[in-house]
Length: 90
Image (cartoon, rainbow, N blue to C red; front, top):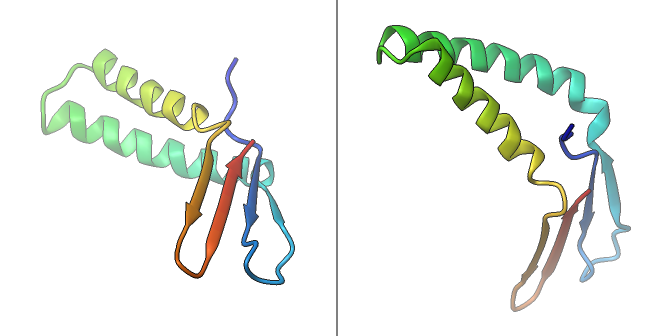
C-alpha cells in the first residue's frame, strides 16, 4: 500500500534559519477529509455535466491519489544569485 508523504524538510542555507521538519502525517486526517469532499464533488460534476461513467471518474480519483503518493522522495534544490532553497519530501 502506498502512503502519502510523511515529512517535509525545508532548508534555507543562506540565512541563519534552522532546517524545518514539517510533520505532514499530522495533517493526513484533515487532508483526507478535504480530498474526499473534493473528489466526491469532482465525481458528481464529471458524471452529470460531462456524462462520464462512474467507474471512469473513480479511476481518475484513484490516479490523483497515486500521484500524491508518488511525491515521496522528491528533492528540490533551487539556487539563485543571492539565495538557495532546499525542499525534500519523505
